[in-house]
Length: 353
Image (cartoon, rainbow, N blue to C red; front, top):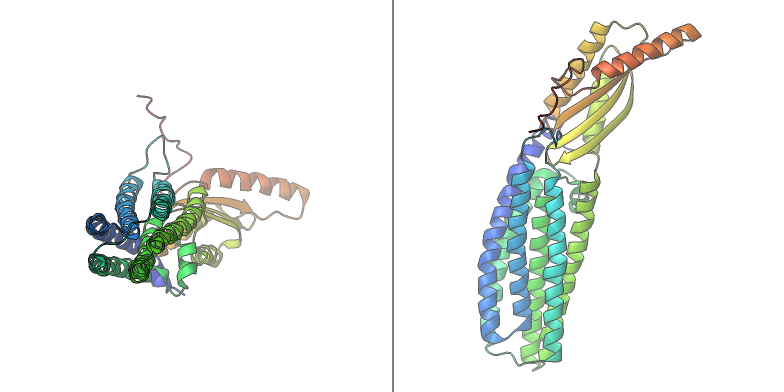
């Protein structure tokens, strides 16, 4: 379990580490793509050309992820009052489609063509040297991504951390590097067997296997990105903390629904229902609301949109119940606002210009 004192720092750490991992992946993939294409054109290896396509697609995908990171950090506007955090989720979905269609599709297509029109490999030593260099670059990129991933995954297992992660740029790079290392291993085996057995069909089959690996990774990435784009709740630890902070306040008698949704990797929307005893003075309710907000934002600064609905406990008598309902409705109307915003003073109208 992540220590409470560290939970609030994790989103900022994840953001910086994910940018570092993406930049490392772009640089590494660009260098690898050039080397693979040169080697593939010299030796005629289908698997090597497929790997070159894979690295080129990964380079472009890294650029799309950086675009998503940059655009998602734009401040809110009147037309997008909750900001642009979900842009990163959108571009991560585009990356998954790119891996599936361009990376996986082109590799499978290249492999089929090589099987239909086989050609003997020439000078496979070049392929071995290039594969070794590519594995070195990919291993370095994977190391950067995995170190960043370890800093944010806590004590969860890797697959669980990926499933519950809210920063797709980080686990996308991790998935891509993992698929790249697996593809390089397949390419090495394909080139070796095709040369030793004098059977060029094996090289084409290796290209198809590489394409299938990319397709599987793409489907998984698309599934994870879809969940974030539609709207996922915050980490269960955060939800538990919010419920505890609200329930521990001396004037709060009950905590209702705790609804959260990620608007971006570092932005969480919170809607909280709290109950107070009938007759609690408005000043105490306001003070309690501010205490709860301060506790939440102190431990989880990523929760930057807080809406609190206030309800008074209903009295036993009918008259008391009616009065309490009116009080609760008024409290909910006046206190359902983000920190620092007083709903009694509406925001100025949008500038149509």
